[in-house]
Length: 120
Image (cartoon, rainbow, N blue to C red; front, side):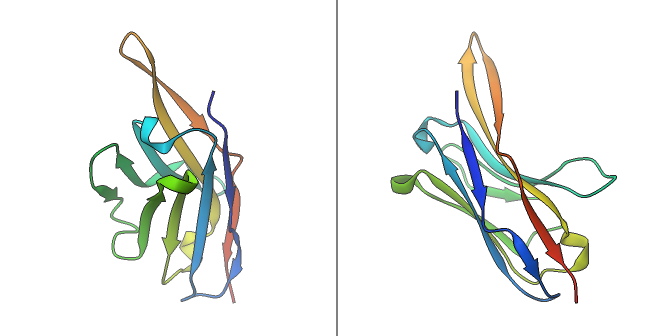
């Protein structure tokens, strides 16, 4: 089992920035893929950014150039730096970890989510 705890959400004005944190209960190096998703009311959960172990970060087009995913392996923490926020970024943001579960399968773990609201 892997527990994920997000923090750092809140309310911000358009054009502002926030940094989300996700504390992982196990060594990040044991995670195959770690990433950030969001879900706005009435919409499907959307993949924003992820890192495959040993690889480089990748981003959805909607956030490329504005959001940055990074990890601090010593702190078992994943960050999502979000800049130039707009009302369309309002959503609940989730941290996700995918880890091998045996026989070639993977298990997905989710945090509880943190609300981000962008408004004047």
